[in-house]
Length: 220
Image (cartoon, rainbow, N blue to C red; front, side, top):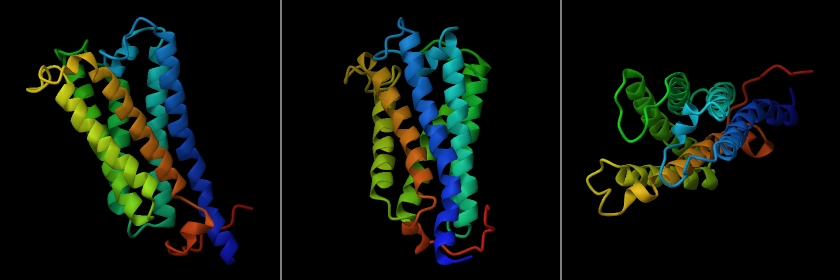
């Protein structure tokens, strides 16, 4: 396999991961439009899964993002197996968290009263921490400033969301209940952006000089 082939073959792993992130964003936007009675400023995005009109879109979008995360992890195992292990584990952890949030619906915010609601909440916490950490590691590995910035932004949004969420010690001081729903939506969008940008790290001639040639078989 020549140099040109070794530079372009990994690009095969790029597009499904990117597609998963884009489908997730599109499904979330559709859920917002379909469920007009949900206030995006003061309610959690998980509430769309409680409505029949928007539930399929939310579940489908969540699964799509999970599949995208798994695909990026698999692609990293193909093009950079030695130095991407930690990022791959975090991406897979994020995917598991996403699947659990899709399988277990939330309780009506802000209280959690059921076992399913607890699983949903802690699974979401796993997603919101694992994906930014994976993005940070990959941003440094592939020298991708955009991925580094989005990963840091996601962590900042998570901190702001936790501070504004009802029940937080400082929520009332910063009037968090008035906009904590918006913060969560921005957080979800930033995590989807992490998966999208991480997928774009796979393939392309610019990456060929930084990852080892593995002698992958040609696809033709």
